[in-house]
Image 1 (tube, one colour):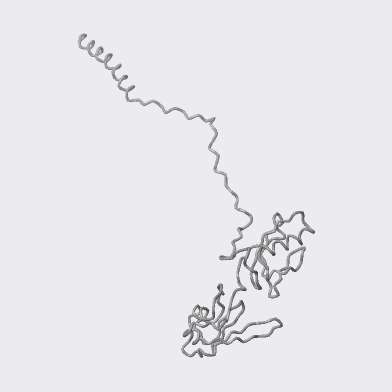
Image 2: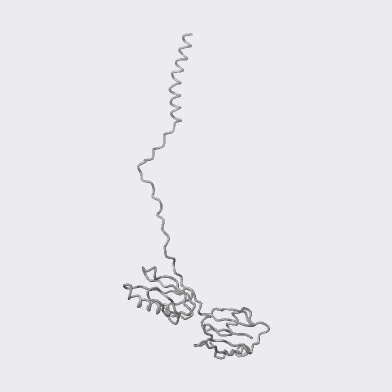
Length: 223
């Protein structure tokens, strides 16, 4: 009996260290602590939107050669002077109204010429003014179609457009059009109307445009 108990005690004493070794082998090292004194990543700086909307010029407008006309829309930007800057419609009399300088003739001038004129006038009130003029909308370069034609109304006037091209751009004549008695109405100084005949058949047959050059504001009448 004593021998049996001693053997059991010996086995227990030997197995205890082995169990501890096995248990230690299963233990995983704790992860390294992350230092808490490191500064947090700064958020990306947000960019405030511009307070001034970009000015986009009308397509196809050359500021050196385009001539401003009545009913055009233009932008006048006076650097560092927001109260003097803005968009302005050109009135039927060809004028615009600007603070400090009053009425200024815009029609008949290029944007560069108008900017120079405004700069000269503003020198009385502002030190070294910088003025930029941009054409926003081209409304003066239009002609009008009336009568027996597919699309009645305003039509953009492109460079060197002939009456034949204008009629084609408006969808052509109706079956009831009097092709030999088409005419162009043109406003002249003093409010007078000039009637310019245009023979559509002759233009189609011989390519003869009869010396007619369309101008802004012309009205092609197809009886």
